[in-house]
Amino acid sequence: MSGLKLVEMERVRENGLCCGGGGGNFVTDLVDVTPRPSSLRLKDVVATGAHLLAVACPKCLVMFEDAVKNDGLEGKVIVKDISEIVLESLA
Image (cartoon, rainbow, N blue to C red; front, side, top):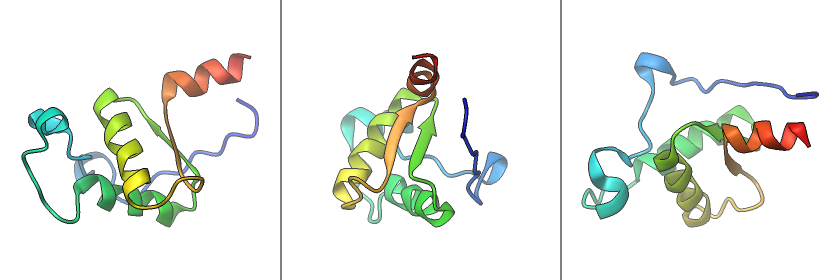
């Protein structure tokens, strides 16, 4: 993937932060907290200066796409599954 620069967020691995979709909250949205975990995590993305967030989890994909819309970051941050990125690189 030519020109790809990988940037990790500060909170990773054992210090990582869930998008908030786990435990069924992806479907039910029972945990109504403000700010939402996906919005907090999206701030971590913006802090890196990255414009593309690559995810490997289908729940994260939906949660972050919603957070981008809710936080007014459309056009500033794009969320894609890593399989989408690989497929685009093959074209």
